[in-house]
Amino acid sequence: MDFPGFLGNAGVKEAISAAFASGRFPHAIILQGETGCGKRTLAGLIARALVCRDREHAPCGACPACVRAAAGSHPDIRVVEGSGATRSLSVDAVKSLIADAYRMPEEADYSVYILLLGDRTLEPAQNKLLKVIEEPPEGAVFLLVCRSAEQLLPTIRSRAQCFTLRPPAEEEAAAWLVEHKNADPQKARELAALCGGNLGRMQDELKGGGAGEAFALAKAIAGAVTATGSHRLLQAAAPLQKDRKLCREALSRLGVIFRDACVLRAGGKTLLGGAPEEADRLGSLPKKQLVRLAALPEEYLQKLDRNANMALLVTCLCQSLREAAGR
Image (tube, rainbow, N blue to C red; front, side, top):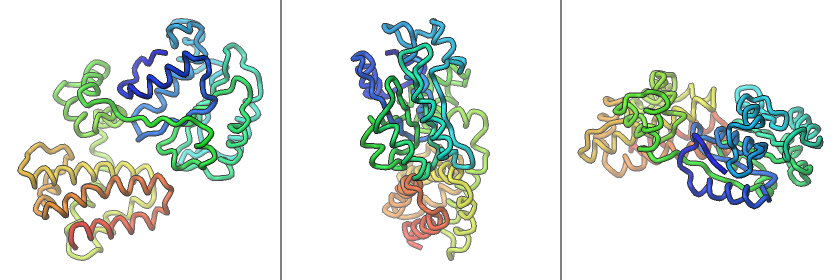
């Protein structure tokens, strides 16, 4: 199986290729990883390969099946997505999926269902989904796309093969941005370092995403960490309660600002977070406190993935930030 346009993740590619070549492809796969790391791209490539008529070079990109799949019109590939702020699947959406899954494929050997699970899929919908994964219809393949498999029921995870996707090497990501998006090479290298090779985030930054609400919030929070009293920090972080996606992006940017503060504390000068004043102010903190601060954004990203209550999560984040900064 080929993976055009999907960078890095050699181990994942090898495992999926082996399963494809064996003719015993798993009926359920979970693709997990941070936003922008290529989960949808890989799901689309797997779906195209499963319906491709050229088994030696799937997805070949040239056969009628591949052409229709690339255009989003292949009758044996379904993309199922939720609605609302969390884009979570509803019980009704899963019911429709199940009803469709028991039909025979129209053209290919498989009926492929790409399930974009959003930030949170409630347990009733997951229980419905579990039933069809436990006893899958012949020829049906379910590709579950999510940021973290932890948001899924253990019974679903135990019946699916899970792959964790990670961004490619920064050099590879920068070269891709230059070749495919006509980015300036120096700018591409800076974005690759800022985003850790995450192509989705790099493209957002290239479009001017760094001036968005999440960046402004991260700067405000970083600036309030060392303030006297807790009111300023709580006020700066309050908007994170309204939107999980906004909270996730702000936490990611906050982590880069804290990283910059650590660089300054160690005598370095290369800053990536776009908030030099905030990083410089934090850089005056003792090294031990800075290291603890730098670990907090990732810790709270994991809590966010476990569907923590947003008001409680943001309150605890503020408390943890103040404690780490010695306030």
